[in-house]
Length: 581
Image 1 (spheres, one colour):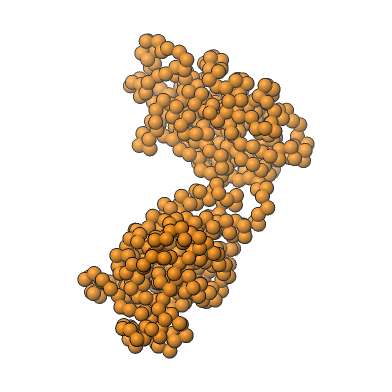
Image 2 (cartoon, rainbow, N blue to C red):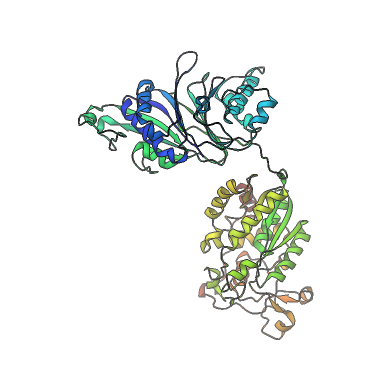
């Protein structure tokens, strides 16, 4: 679609240099828009901002000289520049029509827009707005002015930048489609409002003291640089640029940005947020504070219910604790989502999920995704040999290709389609040491991905992501997880009648035989997950209600010593869970 661009100028005594920066940015962005170029400059003056505009049906590289003349005429040391490289959507008027060129200016509201508003005609008719341009962007100008007027006329309403932000937020709730916009109200000419949903939008702060030497080379588009040009520069420049793409801001400045470079910082505005920027020199933070914004969803989807939570549950102790947290600590209505990916333990896991659901009063849903297990024929969890001992729990030996990524994607689809607000899972700090898809960064990136992959912007909830196995066990017992019914083993288990004939190492020591005779299978006791569970119970100093078929193997020497007792209280664990929920 289009490329929007511009600048908030705080100080710029070297107008030719600033001109070339804006020109480079405009030309770099024409790969997103070749059906017209427009630039508007808002200069704060007493009473109302002064607006000067340049609009051309040509692409940026074809009208550089005209833009240069315009910028050098109207740019000043304190102003706001708003520009657009336009690609014409099929239903919209052609840029040959002068009124149809961006940026759009209607009712003292200046807007540059990347995206489409498919219901603009419906809103124009609903509120009886008069069309001036035929461009869908225009409806935002009308909606903003209408809502701003309503807010300003309310009793005791203080008209300021927050009034404008609220007017933008309320307007967008009625507007469907994609957007990344820059908006200036000429009645508040010192403010630039930038906001987006899923369309890209970047800002970059550039500051240089040119008296101490040029930080980067000067390049004038389409011209040779006079020899005395560099020597003539002798002052300060401070500008905030905005653009649809980071590369275009860097092209304008003439160098790459870096987070350690205080003279040139680039930041992406978060999806579904806005930012109000003032060109007042006294503003302490020129990048502004982000504020939330959204828009109307046209798809037929159930409304998100904040009382409902979906838990990806394998039936193991980690995901079962996540279900208990969602149900008992946070009070959600919980559905346990279990996925059959062809794992050897699928039958035992299903039994465990049903037992956990009964104990915690949850609903259940089971999905067959067994194809992914077939795709990775060598995974020990599906078809290969299950590795034994401690080392298998501290490595990626038990890996099934992209399993957790698939799980989260399917869970997001189910959650959006069924109206769930949150997705819980049992991913934790212990397992993040070996598995990249158990880390906080993985889930943070998934949430960012879900901002674009779901319209309702489903979120993951990592309530136990900072907990180790020992504390997971202690909190699970405290919250009533039926630990004797959970299943952590990587195998399908061993029939208890067979296990009796072997070295059933813990039978008669810490367990009641009669309490387990109803369970046809018992965990192997030697795979990585069993090893972790057994030792975590020892460290937690909590008896494990499960019976195992075999004794631990390949124990390191220090595991023979008495474990250090836990020091964190249950109250502290619950507070930690609530802190990260």
